[in-house]
Image (cartoon, rainbow, N blue to C red):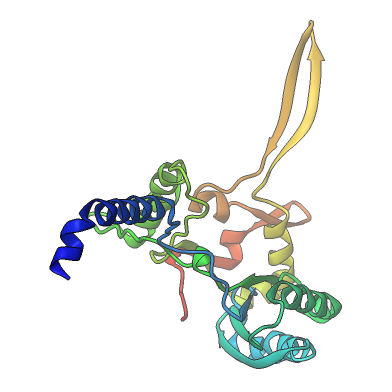
Length: 267
């Protein structure tokens, strides 16, 4: 055997060289990825309904969505999780089924019941794959800034810079707090002035906007007319006019105490 390798050393070296070159070439052509395109037989349905109570969410949104999703063929299991203002459904599809077709069927079933759902509900349907999972996370901490200020920095300073990175498709800001204006209504004053909570809600919905009124021509110049009804400070909100009673103007500060608070979040 020893004599065989010695006498045939050149052909053996040639075969080994060919195998080595082929291995290097195959390794260079091998496609790799940190998050390969793998689709799991699972579809997520997420519904956002602002700050609806949990019990109302279950009855008006979660149950109707479950009943609609259960009518989809090749469905194996449906799991739901409901919290204040949101619910999340996980639809597990039978292995081997067309996940794209199942997603379309789920969206079709949800569209059929969309008219029966409460107004203002936002629903998204997504296939589960590594591309929708977070790749990396960053946290902001400070001893001088409040959670409200940190969230503002993350949203308007950090997020725009990170979105410019090549290959980044989505950036989500999680955590922190949002600033809210809280009204403590004086029921006795409201009854005396004949003002209902619906009136206050309607007035608030008709303000806090910027609207273009078009262009005005004057001496060969065009001027853009803009209506600015934004509420920038607590004082602006307190001075908001609710109604007029004869010569008297009723403002928010007349029937309510306005305070600035951090938003309450539920998980």
